[in-house]
Image (cartoon, rainbow, N blue to C red; front, side, top):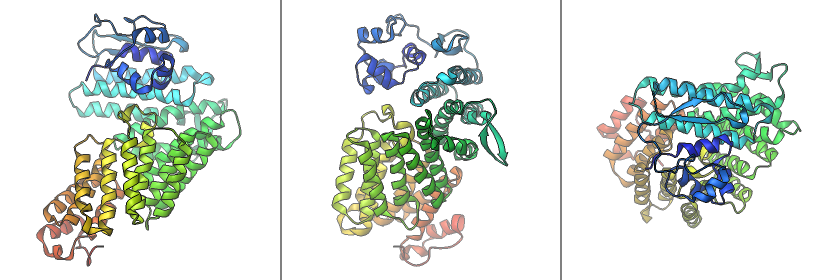
Amino acid sequence: MPAPNEPLRAARRQKRWSQQTAAEKIGIDRKTYLRLETRQTGTLDLICTAFGLSAEELGFESTQQSGSRAMVQIMDVAPATLTLRVDTNDMPDFPIKVSMILAQIMHMIGAWGAQAPHWREIQAVVNGEIYMLDEILQQQPRRTEHLISRRQTLTTLAALPTALLVRKFPGQMTEQKMGSHPSDLLSPCAASLTACWHLLKSDDLVAVAQILPQYMPALTTLAGQPSLHQQAAAALAVQGNILQAIVTMHQRKGAERERHCREAVRCGYLSRDGTLTATALMYLGYTYSSSVRPRRPEQAIHAFREALQMLGGEESLLRSDILMGLAEACAQCHDEAKALEYMALAQNHFPTYPEADPSYIYAECGLNTLYQWEGKMYLELAERYPQRDHAQRAWNALARSTGIQSINGRSSNETMLYQADAARLRGDLTTYTDHLRDGLRMALSLGSRQRYDEAVEIYRKAPEPWLKEPAIKGLAKDFFRELPVGKGT
């Protein structure tokens, strides 16, 4: 893949534009602009006009320097001209690079103050800086201290809002400090939530679970108060509640997850942002189809359809994600035709470049997810229609999912467990026990009670003739201490 065009990225960040805004200024779509930042295509006259810079300044001249990746230096300039300077000399150690990027982000947030741009722009800028950090990390030898530096950077960003709050109750900060304006909390919250999404992509449930409750009450209060900043606060509160819903799901707290999703939906309507409201409704739908017991697929279908209505005609990764949920919920209701129809639509609507989609940061959905959900749908149908070869189709879809880079370890763990279930339906004892054992180990390493309980459910479905097999007894000894009781259904 071509090296990223850092001068072009720096010019965009200087103007505090998102990739979508830059694309609109040039007169192209976002996917095309993404290719510009990776040097895959270009329309120089339009680009130079939009940014007011020469081709050389935007990194399109053939004389551009090559070699080691440029380090980031912080420029002591006014907020309106805040930028990154490229320098290929005297590369510092990785922790120093990380510190520079962290200082850059914190300086930007402090400089914005009351003139902070739209929360989407803030998140786009912070997201870009974190991706820059990850690009630098990929160039380094894999060392534990590098991963620690990255985590410290993300947790520091995630904790930024707490600096504006005072502690009223043990373990919880609920009121802003004297002298600070309510809107002062929004920029740090936007940066924090972006960092939290990246922490989740690294499967750091613990950090997100500890930080978010510190400031979410204050943000939720702002979201509920009529003001010039209410819609922005409500939009950020949607994301905060969704993040908490993901954490509580992995803690196997179904009622809490449902409460957070419902609060996210409420805040979505307050934000008047159709995309965010649709996102909240989607997570509520997945709560009913996957998280709570007993499952409530009819309620899931209602939530998913309401989410599609909120999206209108918008084509996005989010639409595909919602359609995947509808396919699974219809399969749970034994509606084979609708399940297959919705899955086909999900595949048709899936974007070519999901990472370029504006909803990518909070959709928790990649190409591997598409095949994973296809596999889940076929598993549901296989239980109802065993004669139609759905078990093999489930296995094939899940195998495709494992061949694609996963969005995070939790998703890989989920696919692994579903492969065990597909092996059970295919009568393959060895593959069943191998995948279930690996899935259990991964669930324990991730600290996900959700994934562990899913493994238990699959274990309890073991066919009765398998109960005397040494492989099943080995699972019982190593993980469960008891054999499954009776036939699994």
